[in-house]
Length: 180
Length: 355
Image (cartoon, each protein chain N blue to C red):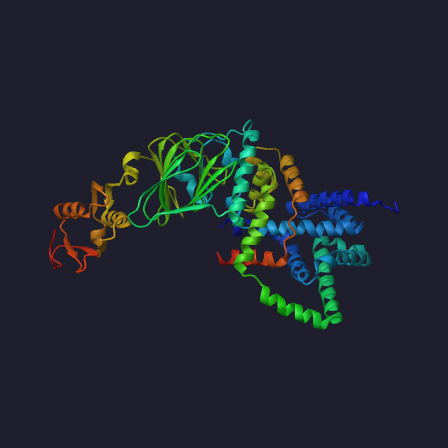
């Protein structure tokens, strides 16, 4: 299965920060979008507070762990501030929750739309990276291009893509993958 | 610099995004050296913009890694020729299966010409996904055959029990074969690629005639006229070229058969109301007849269903077919009392022996 294979390739050290990342995305769901900038600011301040030496060991894992912690505390504080509001809000959300299927299609089409806005070669590079799980060198060999070109394509794609999918949508995508 | 004018902020954001993307690319490749980890840490601690950009680009990375719709994203390799069939199914097993010489991918020169086409397909796929465009639907029932003339001059002949959806735009002609079989006569229009989607397969054409049949676990493409290339989305494999009278059967799983030379007229004879069989098992033959007739044929004995037969029949003339069966195989034909069901049994299983 290609997905499994790609996970295998990217596993190893890379997966070390998948988990903190998931935790951050999961806790982010409880933060209103309007407060995300404040959360980020707090993450930054906290990164400064820690010893540089402590962070250096695994900076990316550290970043997401801190982000997840800040988001969780933020959500907690918000709940304490407005206990009634948030309870009411939570009840409302359950009612309005669209089905997993609808959300999955929504997130899929959102990713598809964003990817489709990239040039064809950049799309192919992304597909080989994420569906086939190939490294830059392997992609370069496959497409008969210089590895530097692959790198440049990836760079441009990442800075152009705006895929801030909500964690709910991401969750729906992930669950759908497990079912297959 | 202690004061940043507002105009600058967008620029600085963009630069932070670029740098974050560079870090992501770097970090994905291999475990970073301690010098790199140190540089990354310093970069993060430089500005909240960096933190925000890194969180954001990681989010993008995560969205892409859980995305499962890559097969429907058109890419360069799918668009190198004017006529392309794409099978984006898992390809690992197919390497050994395509002995045919295939056209080499031309890498340079086609890139710009296809960019526009790629975008068009892309738009089509997205619209299809979003369900914004429902398209015109055509549907046939048991026994029905139907010709559909499309606005661009192309024609479709739909087999029985077939469903298609037609999505036309200014830049693209997109058809979804949801079930059944159809023959496509494609009017030439180089500015609007003609794409047929069947399961996970996509057939692209500019001006040609071909049939696609969706069976239970396979998709069969038969070319009448013109050229079609079967491209596999895992682009390392060569494309398989299909010319007139070539047929390719691609199963949902497993190995693609080699390209077969067929008589496309008889393979697609159903389009003219005839069913042509060449050493096909009785079970398959009966299934085909059932698509055309309200009277249902059944073969209960599995060994009998394996018996092979050849012949050319009028799809709706059941009596002639039954007479043929009776004369060529040792079978008993049993009709239900209402006449809605005919059971074909082995010899000596009793019952009234008509016809």
